Image (tube, rainbow, N blue to C red; front, side, top):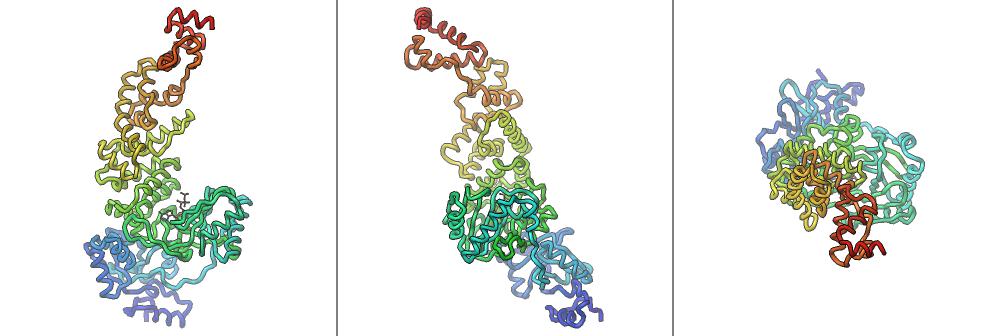
Length: 577
Ligand code: ATP
């Protein structure tokens, strides 16, 4: 008998008996696989695929597009149906990039694929898919990887002490406490995290309150989300949350949450590299929990979502994915990139709040040195159509976004800090029609005064830039007059819309022109005999212009000018004074 040949009988009984008799025999892929699968026709809808699965008692459907293999899981189809996507193609919720092996492939090969995060391994004989191995096959328990050596190497003693203390406080309250997300990711990458995210199996808010009373600092509780932030209780900002599961009813809407285990909490997260936890409780302190194989993705430098509808459930994850991709120099894996394109296709997302979108955009624009590169990638992918269906990212927009980075550098060289978000928004929508730009801004929940400043900047910016270019040979006071009294957004808009000459003038104005002051003040003018009232302001403005043009540099020169302007009688009086 060829013990490696696939059997028609389903289930593991045959494998189990074979292994009992010959424990040294490698059952190979054929021995591990199940055959409860069928190919999914490319045109089948989510609803049709679900019916097929139910009718035929299947565990999954297989898909193939060019040389890419995929699997469609019932859980993903059900999720799509719950999100009202039942009429979309089932292929759109496939998990692509699935490894394919022959029935003779060694067990270790199959397990390695699964260990690296594959949703399944397909088994193909000739051109026919004959089975699939899923991660649910029994695994040999392996000891948890301990991050203790890394902690010792990378973190100061004070932070290590803080981590142990947090774990101890949780334990004294009967809760298991974990560090999660960016902290663990950055630890594994050898980077320094600026904040510590804590997940509590138990009452997170009670633990947060206790941490605040023991560590000191200021605690802000976000009761609606069951989270709290502690600042000043140690070197790191600490975010505390109860471990939770999430359930999305509408694309882009906030999920319903219910308390859960840490493993479930990790599975609701955005990307595998952010879905790892480290035990802080004394028992097992430093042990890594990695249920979705984030460490393997870190090693392979890839950003991987945890299910194909991740971006549809929460489209802000698109912005997060590209932010991490650019920051870390990673790449989205093929399946995640396909899922992102699908989520863009599903837009608009009426249930997604503009504030959440803006918050993610702000993180890109304000916090990341590589922000402009992320915006360009998002633009080229078409992600900004979720702001407005007419949005098109053009090479002009890309240039503006690159310029945005330059503007920030140039201004910071002059010691000027402008709010990066409005400038980023101007760069993103500056090439659109005024109406489309305004629709995008409103979608981002920009309203009231900030909206009118931005729409004003979109109108004024190009006009100002043109005027400045024409007036490049005019005295500085004339050029400053164009810019004075304008909002910072309008100045930014003029810079973005202008050529080199206009930009130099905006920079000069921001760095010097707008702060130039006369040496004489209102009191000096009164003492010189100028009548109280608007003429004081007018004279001071004239004096300032003379300073700008280099006509009056010293106090004496200013005095001389005032005497000249107000006439001989007053001059005599002033000289006496
Ligand atoms: P960063 O270095 O950008 O601060 P971070 O991982 O600390 O990275 P946060 O925005 O502080 O990022 O989020 C903390 C954790 O919460 C993330 O690591 C991730 O696990 C989870 N998370 C944040 N936003 C989402 C989201 N939209 N969907 C799912 N999980 C999310």
